[in-house]
Length: 96
Image 1 (cartoon, rainbow, N blue to C red):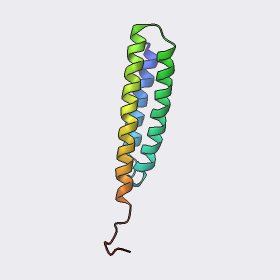
Image 2: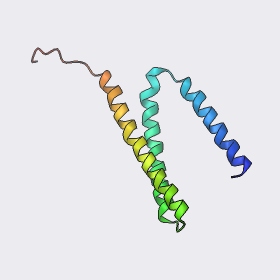
Image 3: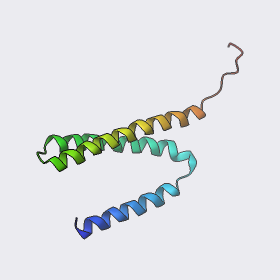
Image 4: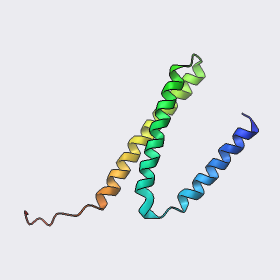
């Protein structure tokens, strides 16, 4: 791995942490939806990478990428659904 790629990875991790830490709680649901969309793109890219590779290491890493991105999308939708449920009005039970 070249030094430039490692630098970009570390910079992205630092900036991502700083940005997420400063997001107000009202924006977490829209941010989660955007994250789910990005993970969906990751799934498609990993599937293409696995399908076009003949090397075992790349196939294993691509399969792991598909698995983890799928878990991330599923978990993100579950969390988003639970957060949106908190904003729904509760029924009064009066039968109306």
